[in-house]
Length: 208
Image 1 (tube, rainbow, N blue to C red):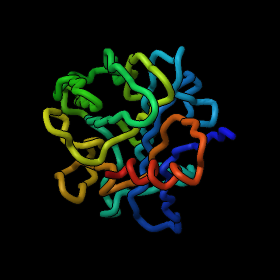
Image 2 (image 1 turned 180 degrees about the vertical axis):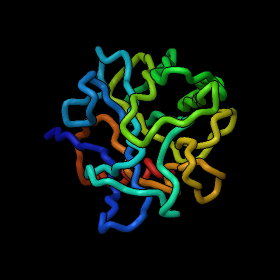
Image 3 (image 1 turned 90 degrees about the vertical axis):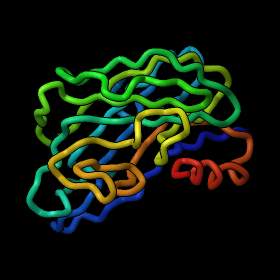
Image 4 (image 1 turned 180 degrees about the horizontal axis):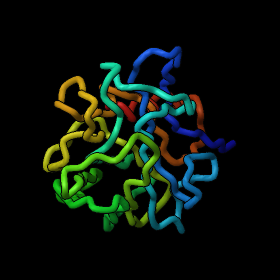
């Protein structure tokens, strides 16, 4: 019997008033601005919107910069995506939704991978909060899994999935990186015949 699995990779950060990383990046496939069970990546879906909350985690709890001083503001973003599973995605155009942002890492579809990066043209910073980064047009066949990558694939210029901030990152100066500085992400649902055979395998793929 087919069952739906929400591949919402949510490693919750417990909020106890102390500084912590805990941003939340997610995909929305039905245009309601959320990542829920209503988001399923099958035809006739033709695009996904990508959102980033710079100062809340996946549970909705507020978080602070780990230095306790600088804000979790935003001046740029980079995205790395990968498709897998029983189906395929043909990547189309990336449409930036951040006013004043210009392309810094060219939108690159390459096989199963996709990368893009934008930055504020005046090098200014927007305050902490929830932002729609943009929309990726695509053609869906079957029921594939589209998820965020945490390592840079060959041939893609965008280095990470993350965002530029006054808050300092672990490896990249002033860049808060998925899989290193924060872990909360959510992607569209997929449907499989066997829950036992696919659940943990798919979740592990999210942080390859």
